[in-house]
Length: 256
Image (cartoon, rainbow, N blue to C red; front, side, top):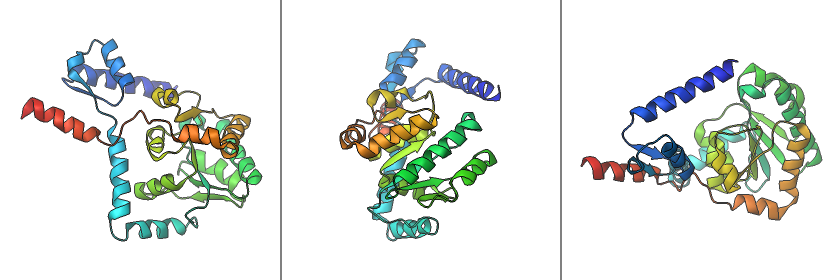
């Protein structure tokens, strides 16, 4: 009930903001279509891509170019996980309230089965601090040799782990936008998503929270190079990292 109320309130404020705004910067064509359905003037809508992709590329550029940054990130990660470039690993995240309880137990058992069936692959999981996450995760996965349970990471370290992961399994919203820009297939442990563009583009697949479905979906990507290639090379609908540039250009044309 609390989750439904929060969602309704969020939608209300989004609708209010759209009503009050004079200019609309839409991350995708599909988002633009929603604005048009609300009778927003098409001349006041510009499709820019999502600024989160700008941030992602900015961080990646800093990691490559800023002296000592990459080394310090690897050193920091290695205190919890012995990061070896070229070692195949699955990056896992999970924290959503709707998955608390039985769903998280199913998720953890799925990861345990995958780890035991694929001993040459690591599963790396920065674990959310919420006790509803911590308790089942540690109870089920603590003793699995190739599962590494990390403390929550700073964004730069997490981006670095994303960039070298083989694939990503998550219930996060933002990762559905970011990971495809890195050429990473994303399996989403939810039954619906507020980012349908990623599903339509083929960069993301919904797998729900049932143990068997998660195991089968991950194993398919591990075993089928053609399937992996199809997802990893799909076009990311959330932009090319130039959203901020487009927004600034648009505003300069109007106000300068």
